[in-house]
Image 1 (cartoon, rainbow, N blue to C red):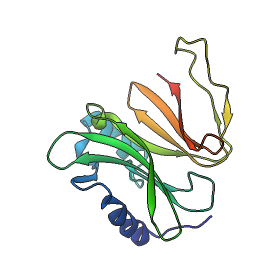
Image 2 (cartoon, rainbow, N blue to C red; image 1 turned 30 degrees about the horizontal axis):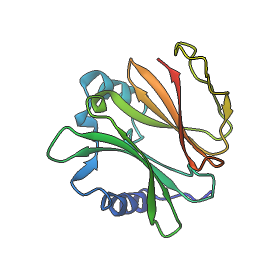
Image 3 (tube, helix red, strand yellow; image 1 turned 60 degrees about the horizontal axis):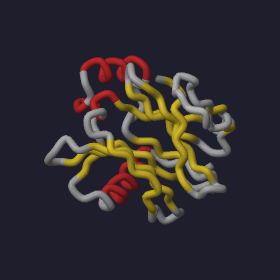
Length: 164
């Protein structure tokens, strides 16, 4: 799998941000105090708003980003599949306005099992999934966890709530 240097990643993020005028990557300071403390204590060296991994399982580095609009509190999670020349296509967009302060991202390794929490009352439980590519765990600190992954067959991002 290709690996990007921090400088390459910063350059790629700046290129990708051009697709979202008026938005910036959500900063640590924009989190609430509890979430900020948790991130610093558990993931001090990782950016909790950027995941740069192969999400599609095609050998190319893709992005999951937490973004906030510059002039408002509007926030969102976007997942982009990218080609070798860093041209990226948005395949997922989730409004996080009202939750950005408690949200952070973590990669979920290839081969991990993903199972929907049984706390969700539904008769149509999705079947457990073994990830064929890296997934994205979206944590709403103290509230819920959702894993997003690329489903090659459906050609879309699928969400599974794993904790509440």
